[in-house]
Length: 166
Image 1 (spheres, helix red, strand yellow):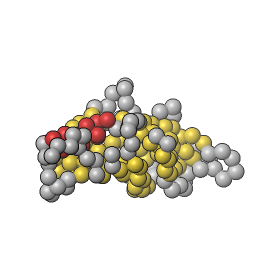
Image 2: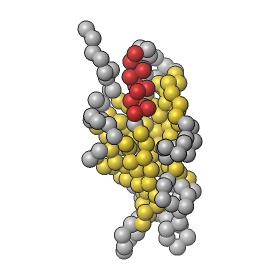
Image 3: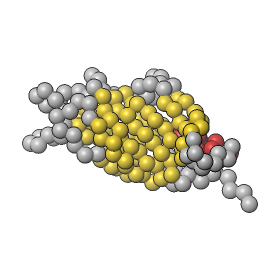
Image 4: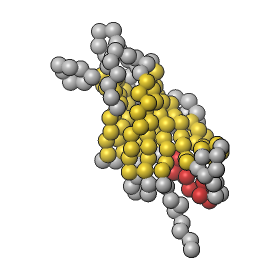
């Protein structure tokens, strides 16, 4: 089905889990695949800008992420978690093939997803076709924690159309 590139861009207003700060890192899971960012020491508004790669397989489930505070001498502390439904970006990729958007330059908006009680979006998320690639930007609200948001950029690579006709 292709690849999903997930860039963990940054975190905002993460919770304090050490004396005055935290040492956050993010674990991202898709099905049985797991990837992890580096630890950013003593920071509640970290910038990772790390790209993590996942292979898309059917059925595509939820993208799950967990934020932890790295501790040297005890178990790492939880700093919240969030999920992102991948169906909107997959359907936008199919739409791109249906309307035959070329790989020319420029950006074509494909879809917007509003933040609501059914998802972890902190604000509206947009899906666009940028230079032939389907890209989604999303701010996720962390759950089971006092505060915190994580910004992600998702990019679908080589996502073929569903129907092959010759």
